[in-house]
Length: 110
Length: 115
Image (cartoon, rainbow over all chains, first blue to last red; front, side):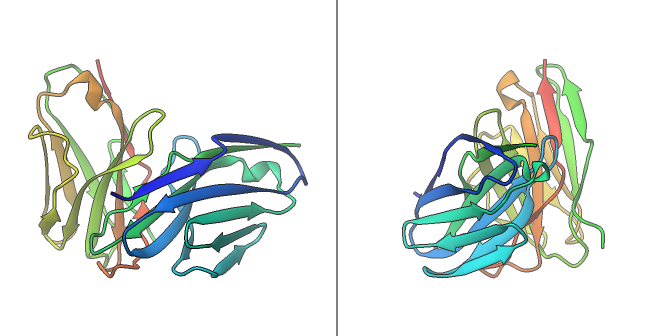
């Protein structure tokens, strides 16, 4: 059974204070690792897909990396508008469902 | 273009009543997924459609839950004889195809409260 564990559960940063969120996973035959952002009362918003170990993707202040056991979402010089819950999910094997972690609640104070 | 839409956005019902939740996927997307997000829990897969057929119903928690999709587009998730433990946000997602790497795009969700 696929499993995803995200840490920390919550993270509070000052504006400009860089940090990283962790996503550890076990999956049979990784076909993709997905990062989403979720704002209160809204559905998850797609950020990145990573397919193989060593892959990296960037978007504005966010950079996602992938190893064989975990993924990191690095946030550089965050702003208050980066405050949200960040969700990690994996797709594995031949099925099409995603298995999600419980998320990291990020708060960036001005 | 338009994203995934869901209706209603909020639904309050009494225990034992039936409810229907609707999902309109992104135009042209052939795959459609339903997930449930409970307080303090991660998103939980419920069911997946390819066209109008549902090859994977493995996530439906009980036989009170059913879903259908018509015309390869709109989907309805029905919960019969609702229970308080059914209270959650129900999220719908769609993807262009069912290729193993296709990105799933989510709607805003329907918040269901069972009193």
